[in-house]
Length: 154
Image 1 (tube, helix red, strand yellow):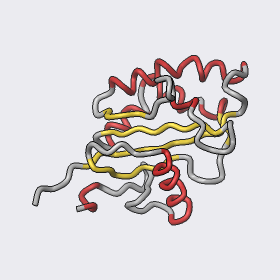
Image 2 (spheres, one colour; image 1 turned 120 degrees about the horizontal axis):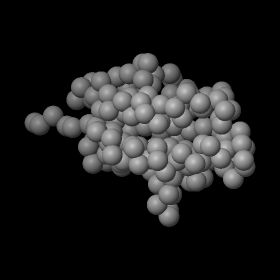
Image 3 (spheres, rainbow, N blue to C red; image 1 turned 180 degrees about the vertical axis):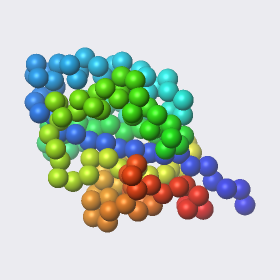
Image 4 (tube, rainbow, N blue to C red; image 1 turned 90 degrees about the horizontal axis):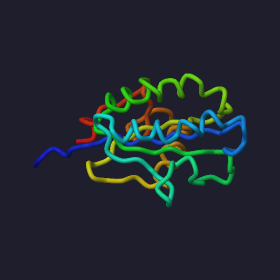
């Protein structure tokens, strides 16, 4: 029996300090297209959630709170995602996140393995965040710090 090939799915959410059209958020919004273009061209990138018009997923409303924004993507490996998250322009956005986002009580990031070719849904991502909040890091939902390799899936 062949071994399945897995990709890494991720969801991250944030609560913006003000609506996206507020001047407080202008620097963040101004970087969205460039940061998403970097993701699209990064080694190991597979897919990312987009708004219906093809724009940034930042404008997708997945929660009752309109100030919670969402990002989901799929990568070939943890290493590929880490390289993107912590480098170049995205690294700067990540370092400046406290200027634009309020702290959340529950986890804001969840990682999990999907079969190659599977595109996760928003409901699936939200479920993974809830699993991580309820159980802590497990093979079902984990973090960069507490990560489970895909080999454990087989």
